[in-house]
Image (cartoon, rainbow, N blue to C red):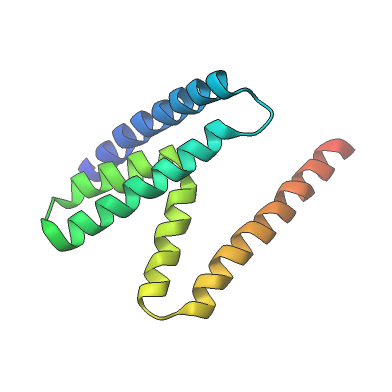
Length: 124
């Protein structure tokens, strides 16, 4: 049960942080380009890369805090960071085809699923 509490609290903070930062950046830069989303994705990738390295190579933290920070906070802040983390792990394991496939499939199938959902919604 503890894991779920840590996950939920991290998720709430990550979601609120994404909303606040994205909105702040968009308010300052305008809406012609999605600068807010880009900022969130880049910062999320930096944070999850930093945390992954610190927790694997520098010091140990409890699994609950790892869930809170990486899965909860970073996962809610941006799922793009999770995609990058998982792809990075594939690259570390020299699984280049899987790494490329993960990125390509995620974007292509994700976009196709988005379009399919849009088309179905238009038909309703």
